[in-house]
Image (cartoon, rainbow, N blue to C red; front, side):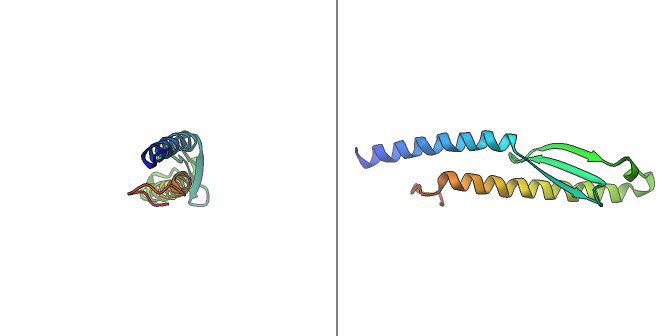
Length: 104
């Protein structure tokens, strides 16, 4: 088999693996909390948020800024965890492939 045919087969296999991983990442979730569990964020490993839960006791109109900060903190933590998992899983798909422009 020619080296170009091998390269094409390798690229096709990698594409299939990456599509499978992307589907798995869309279903996988991570959770982060802030404010002593007053705010809980669940993010999908495809980079989207799945849910936001707020403890009703944290709903004080005088502390709206604090609640906003807790939501932002938990969301950033959850998305960071999701991004890390995504990068790890996608890195596994390209590991061992010597395609120009891709790091393994």
